[in-house]
Amino acid sequence: MSHDSEGLCDDLARWLSAPPSTPPEWPADAWDGFRQAAQVHGAAPLLWLQVRSLPAWSDSPIGRWLEDQYAWNARRIARLHGELAEILRLFAAEEVPILPIKGAVLGSLVYEDPAARPMADLDVLLREEHLPAGEALLARLGYAKVFTGWKHTRFALPGSREIVDGDHEHPDNPRQLEVHPRCRERIRDEVVDLTDLLWSTARQDELLSAPAWLPDADAAWLHLLVHATHHVLLNTFRLVQLADLARLGPLVRDPEPLLAAVDARAAYPALALLDRYFPNPRDTALRAGLRSRVPDGFAAWADGLDLYAVCHLNPVAWRAVG
Image (cartoon, rainbow, N blue to C red; front, side):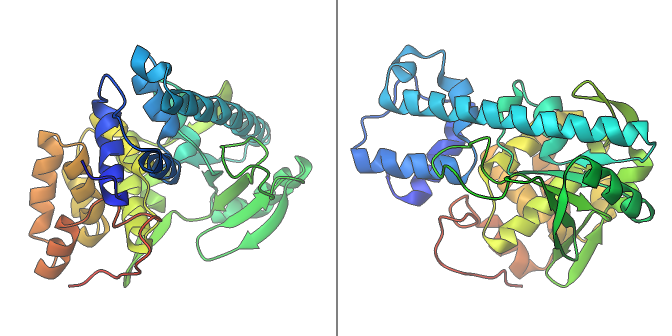
């Protein structure tokens, strides 16, 4: 069995679906590499849920490490969810629509345990005409603007921007709120804008016991695919992004029209990775349908991707071809 980073990433993905009953008898350096891969891919808490009922895992050093990672992430998620709920309540009270996206909703709605999914920050969609009102409301909660870019503006609470623990998902590690006036991703020479789709299909409901606008599953799924491809192109893709798609997929009603409405290059790489690591008949068929819409060179490149090639562990900078 290979203990290089590529093999360890693949083991990690496989074990999220079917972990061995006993941890392999690996040397210490292999387990060190596995821990690094699990942290880079945001998968340690989720793997703990898969192995915690297996005595050989729970009584092992790697099992105790996974349990510790889960426990720290549970504390962090509780902190982030508390902050999001406070934002949602205030915006609802002032009748300013705000739409949580990505991890801000996925952990609560599609995971068996919110603590299974790490979150670096909170992402929300706020219409451009509501930005001034939204910024004023955030200021009332103590948030300060710390960055403005073409995709989003970042806000942070005092004392929430310094790393205090690089080994865990610590509650006091950086926590920022990313406010997106538009939901868009740059995919090579194309900008894919899903703002209108997300808002037009959103519904008013409840999240974290607070009033909230929630994204439709179909629109959220397309956004996750495009966002994942963006990270593939940056070498910052994480296994947890595939876990998101695998969990959200069964809720998607009609994916074909969604894919037909965007540049196929924006969805194909993420769908290829999903089909490789979490295959199911529908995604395989969707991938086959998309393949004819992308250049042959691009498709060949995407078909050859693996988790190591597209993640932060890969030290070689590369670019897509075709």
